[in-house]
Every structure is written in structure tokens, then in C-alpha cells.
Image (cartoon, rainbow, N blue to C red; front, side):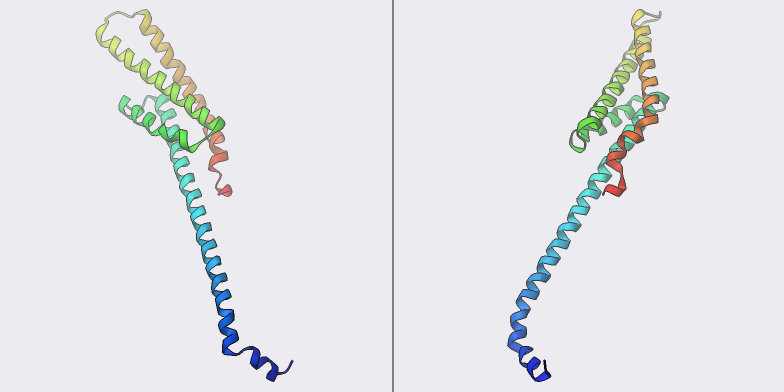
Length: 161
């Protein structure tokens, strides 16, 4: 092909005709990149919310077995676990429900023990029962802290974002 044959092909009208498809392709590419960015942002936000729930669960278990916080802190942590319904499914959701039940059970036992200790001067059967419940929940919480990261790993693996 000679230069004289190429020049008419590159005429202004031919370039204008090519401009529309080029702009369309560029617009599609930009839209695709925006979609991918929004998808990544959604995954990151989901990861952050799940990690926050992991931290809440860990803190709740630590509070349960150390007794380091007052009842208000444990109640606050229990309330922060309400997102579990929407962030997890299957086994991990069931596990979080189980943690919530154990923590609530311990919380209730501790509340009742405090009431009994204030009102009843002598040890009662109910006090012993509540103490056993609290002791059992403390032991359960300690054991759960050892395997908590493993249970959440599937959902918090950054490589899968």
C-alpha cells in the first residue's frame, strides 16, 4: 500500500465515523471499571462489618471468662451481635447464635446471683445452681476463644476479597 492510498482512508469524515465507536468502547470500559470498583468496595465493607462482629464475639467471650467487665459492657456486646443475622449464614450464624445464648445465660445467672446475694443471707440451692451455670459458661467461653479465629477464617480471609 502506498501513501497515496492511505491518505484518503484517513480523511476527516472517516475519522469522524470511527470516533463514535471509540467513544462507545471507552464509555463501556469506564462503566465496567466503575462496576468493578463498587463491587470491591462492597466486599471490603462486608469484610469490615464481619471483622467487627468477629472482634465483638472475641470480646464477649473474653468478658465471659474473665469477668473483667461490668454487666453493662456484656449487655452492650450482646446487642452488637444483632447484625449476625444479616452478615453470616449457615454454621457460623448458628455458632454466633450459640455464643449469644451462652452469654445471655451467663448474664442472666449473674443478675439473679446478684439479686439473691443481696436479699438472702444464707446459701440456697438456687444460688448453687446459678453459680454452676455461671461456672459452666465461663469454661465454655474460655474454650471457644481458642477456636474462634478458625471458625471465622473462611469469612475473613483477605485473599478471597
